[in-house]
Length: 361
Ligand SMILES: Cc1cc2nc3c(=O)[nH]c(=O)nc-3n(C[C@H](O)[C@H](O)[C@H](O)COP(=O)(O)O)c2cc1C
Image 1 (tube, rainbow, N blue to C red):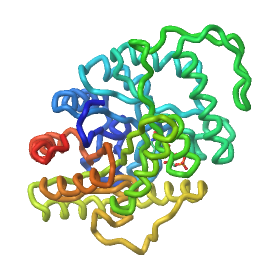
Image 2 (cartoon, helix red, strand yellow):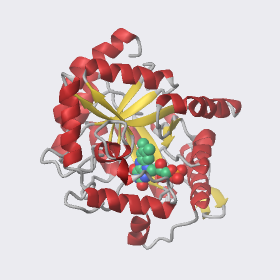
Image 3 (cartoon, rainbow, N blue to C red):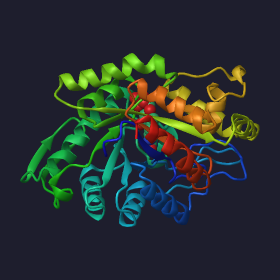
Image 4 (cartoon, rainbow, N blue to C red):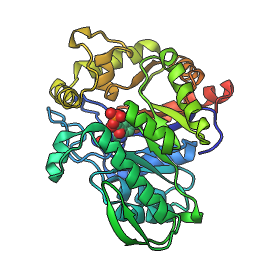
């Protein structure tokens, strides 16, 4: 990643509807042509990375968000071959991918991109997907313990270690080897987005980037500083990022009106289905009575960006919010739009130069 103080990624474009849970006619069509054009546009304007979502089934409702999605390693390989500067992450489910297969697939992708692959390690949470694979979902923290074994196997293969045996609780492997090493013999950066304590500690111990949930930038400031301090105490540097849903229009009123249009089309069946999956996982729920049309409202956030922080406004307002997020200690934002291809050019023309003038890019 380059030296911008506030880095930017595009999040979720490999999946139909992206991060938006609404039956909008203009919802994201995750075709290959659209992904390719988006990646080349991102490459051109200096966006640092693209981060896909590894999803194996949609969330139902009329719009079935993420019902169609490109497998993320293959998707990353295609985009890396067609870009020059952009880092492209793949997202790998620990319980569903054997580490030897994944290590070779990812090394292949990294050579295609001449060192521009990134890795998002997901330890899993979606019960329906586990069932689809016939895999029993382990207790929450055990999934991260398996993730640690998985990652240490991948790292040893990538380090070019001679045939080694691995005797872990989750993997027992014999005479393991794998070549080539990643491009330039340097490991791709690894991110993890676990927000639980086990997930965050996985990131502190192993990841280059931690994606954390943000309610408000100010409330998150101590936690972000602590994550970085805990990593530093272990001799590691870690960046902290968060996902952000964006509606940027020439005036605040136009942006607010568009958010209202999104909420009016919210796919409550899909949102409810996702809330049920989260409830099974014991994740925090928001109160369905709280519907007001604001970017900071939990339900508006769900329709626009699956619960992530949202920034709704004219270019000056977007830049003020980005500055607030950066001041909280965040190193990067993984942004999503309803229609990435249609909205990114305006964002690039109006927001990026303002961020440069502010000195954060
Ligand atoms: C930026 C970001 C990307 C994520 N990508 C995926 C993904 O592609 N597939 C998936 O199943 N979960 C994904 N997750 C879920 C996380 O890996 C994690 O399971 C979730 O945030 C809950 O945290 P916990 O596992 O610590 O309980 C993502 C979360 C975030 C914030």
